[in-house]
Image 1 (cartoon, helix red, strand yellow):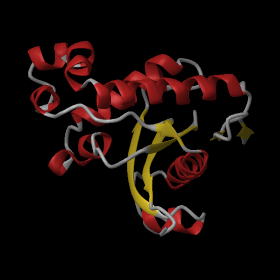
Image 2: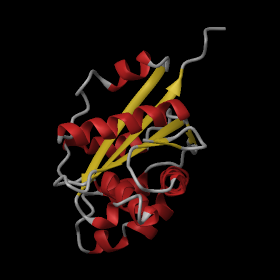
Image 3: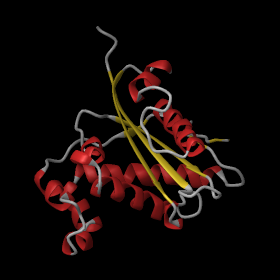
Length: 195
């Protein structure tokens, strides 16, 4: 396990922490472009899918929603995302509730507020955040926006939930696993302390 200077954790061996930091910042930039300028994101990232009718309604959705505030990195949520990326890799399954709900895990580490979680995985090397962080950041966010095969496009809606203010980003790579690249986003909005 690598401990990064930003407080982010990335589970892997033999790779520089810089790749993980770059990846987290690239994901944050992609998500914030999506949130602050959804129409521009659609034009930049989904034009080909829209033309080929493989965008699963994402183009239309992004051209109908209003811009929202950008997110900031949360070290607490990033630690949760990283440890959960490792867990789903070890268990070889994409499930939000392997060791409790996302909300229960957040509360366990002292995060009180609204939370949401996105999971994704791919065997394609263009999703290897350790070697090609730019390609992986664009690819994972785009995969979640298109959200093919997910009832109700829940990942897309979590990405564009305007009440979220923070994000945590986790990645785990197991080159011997069928899926290889596991990605987790933890979203949150802390509740005030009651004053």
